[in-house]
Amino acid sequence: QLHLQESGPGLVKPSETLSLTCSVSGGSISSSSYYWGWIRQSPGKGLEWIGNIYYSGSTYYNPSLKSRVTISVDTSKNQFSLKLSSVTAADTAVYFCARLPSDDSFDYWGQGTLVTVSS
Amino acid sequence: DIQMTQSPSTLSASVGDRVTITCRASQSISSWLAWYQQKPGKAPKVLIQKASRLESGVPSRFSGSASGTEFTLTISSLQPDDSAIYYCQQYNSFPYTFGRGTKLEIK
Image 1 (tube, each protein chain N blue to C red):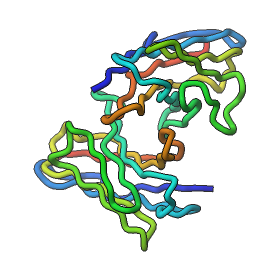
Image 2 (image 1 turned 90 degrees about the vertical axis):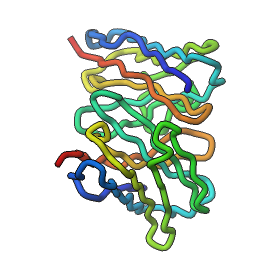
Image 3 (image 1 turned 90 degrees about the horizontal axis):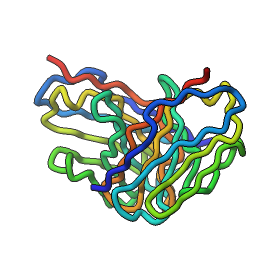
């Protein structure tokens, strides 16, 4: 059974960089059949897609966040990561990682991790 | 961006009722639509892919349909465990976008 687990600091200061890692178990992140994505959820903005990455490193970002987002993959560790720079209180949200089959939408999700931006 | 408009925003129904939730896309998304169920403190769980394909393990009382840019999630006979928030999401084009959700309460 595939399992995804987000990890990273739960508190980030304004203007700093939010960094999260998604560890994948029960399946290979290098499978050619899947992309891997980040989604966040806040009371104000609901569910918001952040971006996707393929095991080769190809990325697709939400234009609203593109200037601040970097998603990377480490196939040796079966992990992918999210970096969001210059954060503000508006970036406070629950961040989810998820698997994305080639011709479908997100089918497996991590449990989510709350990141609060505050000094 | 493609806007996804869900209705109603809240819905109260009784066990055994037939329930319908609607999602309208601001432009054509073909059948590239998913429906999710989210319970408090949990991640969204996919119910339907490609507008009408039931995901493995999802009870058959859930179904999805499409007509142009209007999509429908139907629960044929509401069960107590169906209390949740339901979201639609388009994956026709980037950026992927979600509806604002329908909160389904059991009377």
